[in-house]
Length: 141
Image (cartoon, rainbow, N blue to C red; front, side, top):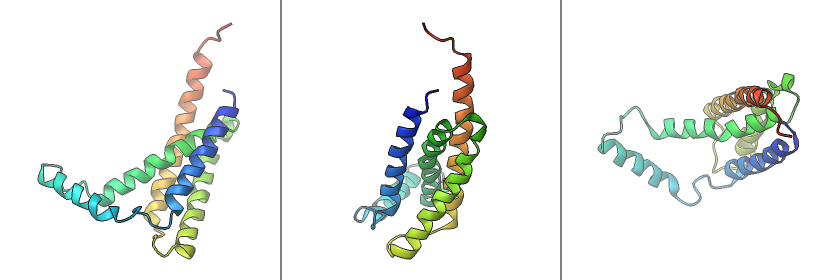
């Protein structure tokens, strides 16, 4: 796979993650109470109580970092795919540090560290599947 497109997508993804995680007010106003109210309404409608706001937020953090890991792994030689995990962890550490040090409205948490790194791992692993499928596909001439 040509590395130019994944590199461009990695840059866009990185900027989007920075915008979402370093925006001073994580709720974009007062959205967290609304989100919690929606989850409570869904519980009243039959959504299992085990699916909490925190579980949804954790899952969203995983999903947010899957493209980061995927595009990073596709931007480097195949044998370096695991760097997506290492750099996903490093990027998350930077974000959590910046949130804790400079953004009093934000909270640096270990659960974000775990979720974001897991997302980068999943994305890196997906890159192996993408590359395997590319090798099997015949070239069009």
